[in-house]
Image 1 (cartoon, rainbow, N blue to C red):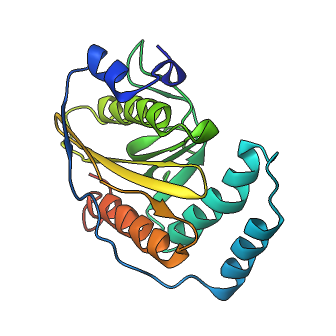
Image 2 (cartoon, one colour):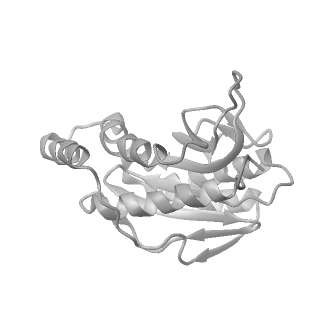
Length: 206
């Protein structure tokens, strides 16, 4: 099944049994957002119309914040719509994928994927988490025997949710976080990237 065929977490669990819990994934810590980006976010919020499509939200809200955080973690790489396959059923292209950065030599492989980001299309977080969890399982499969924790983010651009896959347990953080508090979303994203970066070890990827 492609990631898009997993319409909810329950559909994923029917194929790949996991423990599921609600609990903290990252702390609710604020981190200042540069004024130029705040201005862009305010502008996009002000000019959006009810007929905007999903790309409007990913291009104006999701990617700018991912890129802002990414700049602080040069050992990581953010891929956009990069094909990922964990097995014959876990295949697709996550909206965004964070992995160890490619080496200096041209490297087209996604090594050590640690974070999958999925858009909640039509504001459907149940379906968004189904697709995101499927992508997280694919990340775990690509990582093989390495005991790496995989993180997940589901967002409409305006609302953000966070999760974690650690072994056979999927944890989803209670609550949703609005872009109207950009410092909070920024701080929580930074914690996710920091957790991913720590798993690469002190000198090079594990």
